[in-house]
Image 1 (cartoon, one colour):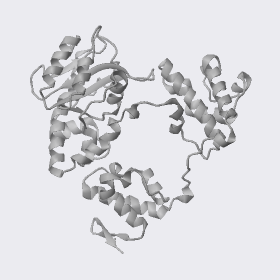
Image 2 (cartoon, helix red, strand yellow):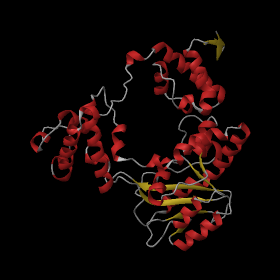
Image 3 (cartoon, rainbow, N blue to C red):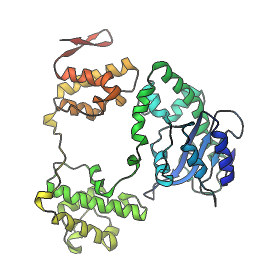
Image 4 (cartoon, one colour):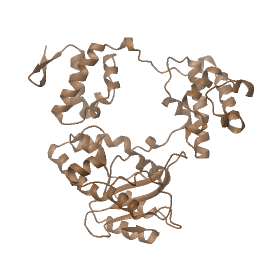
Length: 385
């Protein structure tokens, strides 16, 4: 098990990897106590069975610079292969201002190839690589040094088996002609905006029930302060104050420390000092917005708007189309998407690209009364009307 602890050693490995058609990548990190993930380990492998074909990179080693790795990530001649890549890519996008290209995510590819929804790495290792993964080191502290042999074995397995999984899935996609489907899914992962939360837009992640424009304005200001504070101090946003406390503050509208003390859901640390000052300033800013400039509340989808019978039919159609196409149903449309369609929505990811051809077009036809569903044996069939 080779661990790279110097920039020169990393550069030598990346030079060798640049001659390969692909390199598999994984990371180990800490996130629980901070806003930004702390990168603790990078695992890399390229095709081969030699001892130097798969390595661990220690980003915590003194003096090690990840510049050679980021250069490899920018080399368009080498495919960078991940499994469930989003969190790994977030680290590289934030720390190195780099998103690997070209990119391949075996979790997305597996869903397109019929392995089910959100298929886990261990499942693919078992079904494709015909191997087992030792999970005993999964929840260890990867920032502590030295790493144990068990940790190193576990970490390397995340990229060594991934080689066989990638080669199998890539071949399946070539045979089915569905490589473009995966590429379409990867567009979100390639977008740098996916990994950065702008404080003024942080409120869009909140779940608010029938809020007034003023409540939305207050929530927007409070969420913006919380996000800015969390980013500046590198602490999780929920350590500043949680969503339920934020919404309580938007309703309470405290003007001073005395009124702030009435917030039942606010952590003790947030009732004084910089956080308390920030909360009061955010509330004052939200209250000062002129009525004509208040944000428009997000449209609420009431249960009374949803045609329940149509939603049930859409679920049957989705399952049937997913089985016919050999893809995970969730990849075509979510349960929320189906409710939206049954409530009258006619746009969304389900109505674009390959999803439209596989499922969306027939979903719209079903809503328009142009087709019906019928059972023949164990199969669901579409009947034109």
